[in-house]
Image (cartoon, rainbow, N blue to C red; front, side):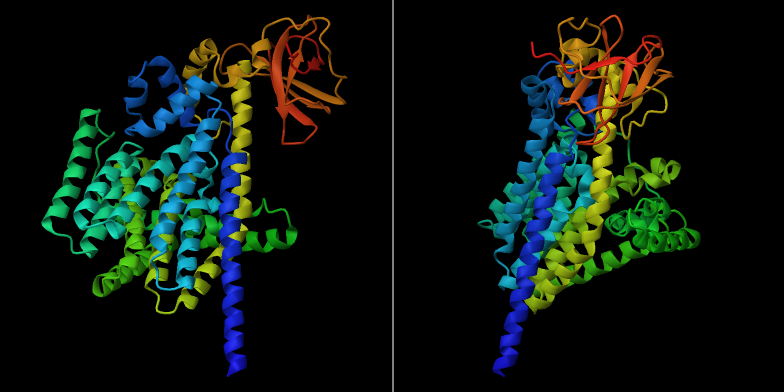
Length: 554
């Protein structure tokens, strides 16, 4: 008996140690992704925001809605980043990190009430997975996205804490209503916080006063949205089409967790043949049987349906047992369901025209909270904390491989963002240049005002030399070992040149200098630490092999 007890104790110790290590690994990977993968240039919606901020004076720059989103609080951070740091994105990245860690801290205060240490550890790991798993790299690895996404998650967590742990339901409902209002004016998804709060209030058998307070918060939010210009296109109800979409949308994290096994194009990029060959075979079989993974075939809808069934069982148990510990997980999952429902209601026509966008990475920051909420509620209500911890550890282990390919996706997005931004700074954007999620027309509208203000890419020391004569006494670097120059069409005007060169330069970006000493372009490394560079130059003429130099420090 002693040996058995000792063995069980050792097993618990190993399991708990594994869970703690996984918590640290996932949290550290998420924070590092936020810092290292976030481009330090505007990207995607960031260009549109930049043009608006430069074209409006305070407070309109902060208050005006964008594409149906009223991002007042994130806009304050973005405008400060513009005015204080020339839109260098660093302040947004730091704000996103702080908001994500603050969200985790609030959830930890909720988790501390769980029945056992192992249940608490399982709950913490569940929340860390929901926030910091690299399946969320689209939000984690982009300051413009993280600052609004994690404002919403923070207000969701604070509101849930107020309802679950606050002093009295009345005070909790008031705090939750304020959090719902703040989340609503952080991003369009924020108003779904009210659904999570309502779920907790229903489980707590809230009285009419509490419901009146929470409803008043929702009504005020809707009224202010309407006064602020509404919330974009109206919703269209088509339940038979939208329900399968919602179910598939909820399963989005499962797709990215197993991406190379479902998509042959992704499987082909695996570096090791031992993994690539079987993954491609499985992915080809999946595509043949069900169609493209991103088009949301029925297995994904089935996975979402199973998730909803799990949610229903947990909610029923929480109602019967009145388990306060389960309420935060139920509220989190309900929030995510409401976000998905809003998205398919408002964007039905868009998804019908572009079915691959239903499961786009930008939505995973919300759908991952559905599964995190289910894991959190399961840990809270588990009769055996060790089993709950073992299950959550298993999920974390199964997700580990996806950390690699999602990190690669984030790194590629940063490269695309920085190369396209540098090409735009030079003024040569060739038709085939990858822009990622940046819309060219929005980029083109932002460039003149950003150039005039000297912000974003135009705040670079190197960009200030464009079109100027490099002093004759300024040191040039040795001629590159290999150079390729090609004339390319230019979406911004006259034809330009694209360069590929190899050199070991001590600077972050290179000046590309024509024969008359004019700085006509810029180049950057293809990847950190590489000696291969790519760049663009103005004009289709010029010397076959331009000189290269680092920007003079003067």
